[in-house]
Amino acid sequence: MIEITRDEIDFEAVTKSVFSDTSGAVATFLGTARQDEDGKNLVMLDYDAYPEMAVKKMEQVRDEIMERWPADKVSIVHRFGPIGVQVVSVAIAVSCPHRKEAFDACEYAINRIKEIVPVWKKEVYEDGSEWVEQLGK
Amino acid sequence: MITVKFFASAADIVQQRESKMEVIDGQNVSDLLDTLCSEYPRLEMLRPALRVAVNHEYANDEDPIHDGDEVALIPPVSGGRE
Image 1: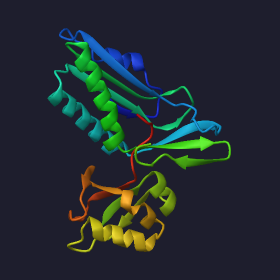
Image 2: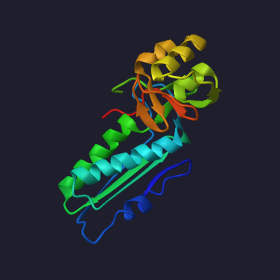
Image 3: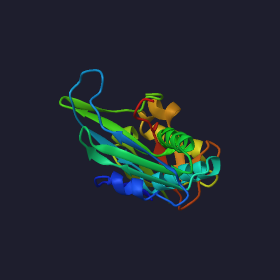
Image 4: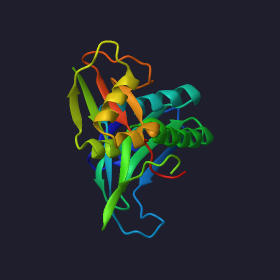
């Protein structure tokens, strides 16, 4: 399951989509919108996306994982549009025979998504907004 | 004619999401950025961090642009610390 959507992410469905007879471990990562540390009052996050390319790049992340780990299945669902605090913005699930490879592959997935998937986060405050584009942030 | 798509801060600068442009024969990605930056000087600030995609794949400065291509300006994709 590789999708980009404006709708709420059903992360239980994302997790279940990678279950397989040969997997003893499923690792799921959820990215959630949070208040920033600097004390400004965040109203919401507003994600911009290039949907056609985002899907292609998420498929690339999946393919890279399948090459590097003995993963059975990989699912990635990214949300875009306005998202409130505590709401899931991205869900990743990886199933593998053993837990270490599942954890490692899942971490690799979120790091690669941040590098190559064209989705941008705008923090919207009561008194303005800004794109979160600084590298390494 | 090519389609140029703008996202996030790049869309804010050019005040549009999509534009149709004529391509000159032999033009590459760097030439197109030169044209866009002269039209929208504030893009120049973003340029060092900007990536360009041609037909949904990241492209290099020297890569050629052809009639009918879909080109996108990709500001740094980020968000979330490790």
